[in-house]
Length: 382
Image (cartoon, rainbow, N blue to C red):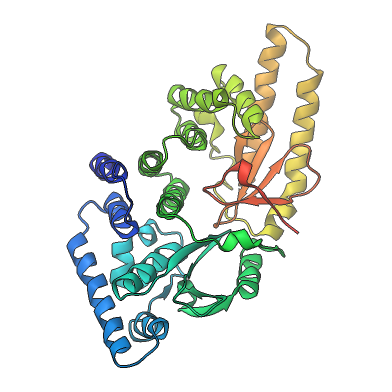
């Protein structure tokens, strides 16, 4: 594993600039993934693609059709459906080389190629998906680079998101508002963090979070995410500093659950033990909504029993010790099912596009949030 510190420092310098260039920011993230990445070739490649689009426009083709023809017919850009979660798919340079990627990096390629060819386009972040909008597309239509440049209206994209989440959802008009440059880069970084975390590559996952914090130092939820990641890596003292800072900020509906988790960690029983052990081998599972709902009754039963035992205990040192043991057992039992602990009695199921989220004593699994939104950004599932 290469040392990501230099790439992080380069990204910090980029983030300190007054204006963000999404493509250059994405190239800086590519260096985080591969410090030896040839960024000059990536810049040259995007120029070449834009020149091909301009040539077709000069021949009389509609600009958006010229863009679609070059990127998706001639060059064959499309979604990577076989290794979607590979960290390399968060590298814009890798996507330009292989013509495969995830929705957001393919969208960055599309928007930047269009911009250099004279089109006004923008990235649109939807729950679990990412597409391209803008004034130079037909009114009411969006371009889906992951689907090979297919043009879709809001209704079709709502169906697409519903399929990704595993249940029918209604997307408000605001969901189709173009994302800011900062939001696009933040989403790439948080996707990358999750890709590394699933592979137990904690140093690289933490580096991606450091870059995210450079983009928005005021986003305290990133301190919570950093603390939880440090906790999984067994670095409990560093984790406590981050989690306590998050709780002290007073923001976030999950602050109480995180505060309770901090108390347990402070007592020394939950640190690296919060990670699934060899006996709980179903770790880091990716769930469909149906699978998560099938597992939920077990999580509810385990949690209800733990809450009841926890509440029955009185005061005193002996009771406190027993309380810690109850939470320790709860953590191991829940994580052995493949779910993730995000606070005391707060459980997430990783869908590969975000989390299905459950908090005791909710009766059903009824909420979803993306990797970048956290608990406060939960959306109701239908």
